[in-house]
Length: 144
Image 1 (cartoon, rainbow, N blue to C red):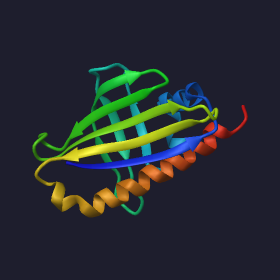
Image 2: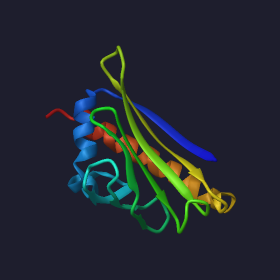
Image 3: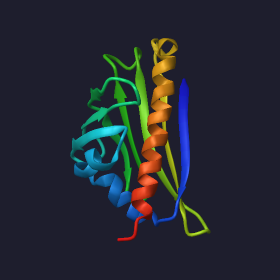
């Protein structure tokens, strides 16, 4: 298994960040990594997600929502063909802290027999996470 884990501190309440993350219709306007997302926001339901890592082709998949805890965590799992070939468990975690900021933890755990062949794609994915985190920070910290 391989994990990409990124983190950024945002000067905003978890509720404000959560509202942005759950507003799927607006992703194409601000999100440089997840360029499209739709679907019923309910555990066990599938989403339609299109990502575009930097300098890479867009990829679409239909992950299932594993965790949906308002203002705390969104987690989904997707696969390529079958879980043993390639599987990813993507997560967004919001952790408020004493400084009045929220730590946004954005990552994914990858597994499967094709994982050793995906090193370059995983590097681009990390870059995409970091770009998304920066844009989420800018949008969340903007006065309403």
